[in-house]
Length: 263
Image 1 (cartoon, rainbow, N blue to C red):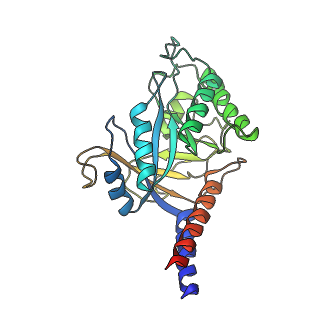
Image 2 (tube, rainbow, N blue to C red):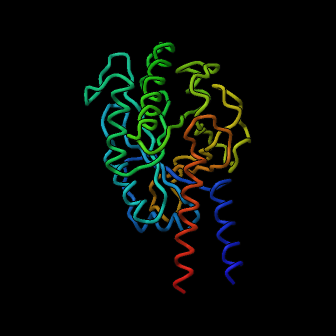
C-alpha cells in the first residue's frame, strides 16, 4: 500500500514539474476563497496575480486575490507591470527600474509571494528601445542581486508577447534571455510550442497564456480569467521557475506522506 501511495506522489511531482495549469486575472474584481477553491478543484494549481500597476502603484485588488488564492490552496506568484512612460509620470514617484524593483521586492516579501514576472506589454512605454532595454536590465538585475544577497527568496522571469517585445525593445534583443519566458498567445493550445516564433533569444517559453478574458468559467461568476499552461523548459538563470516548482512538489509530497501516516 505504501509503495502504491508513493507512486501516486511521484506522479503528482512529475505532473507538477513538467506540466500544469495556472490562471491570472486581467480585471479588477476580487475572487473569493471559495471561487479559488473551485478553480483549484478544476486543476489550476497556480495563481499569478498583478502586484504592481503601470501607473506606478501597487494593485491592492491583485494582492487581495493572491491572499485568497493562497488560502484556497493554490501556489501564488506575481507579475509587475512597471511604470515606464515618456513623461515619467508615476503615482509613487519611483522612476527607475531599480527603485520600482526594490519596492516590489519589499511588498512581495511582506506578502510572502514567490516567483516574479516582469510584464513587458505596450501600455505607455516610450519609443526609445535603447532606454527601454536599460530600464528592463535595471529592474531585473536589482531582483537578481536581491536574490543573491538573500533579500529575496526567488527569481524573476519575463511576461510578454512577440509583438509587444518587438515594439518595446526589438525582437532580436536577447539581454534577458537567460530568464523564464511567460508567453502570451491566445491560440487555445495547452502547450509550449504551437505557434511560437523564437524571439528575444528564447527558443521556447516556460509559460503559455493560451486563452484570455474568458468569462464563462462556472467558478468565477462572470469574472474574466486568463488561462495558462506551464511546463519544463530551458532556463539559464541561477534561479528558474522549474527549481521553485520542484521545491513545491517536494513540499507537497512531504505533506501527503504526513497525511498518509495519520490514516
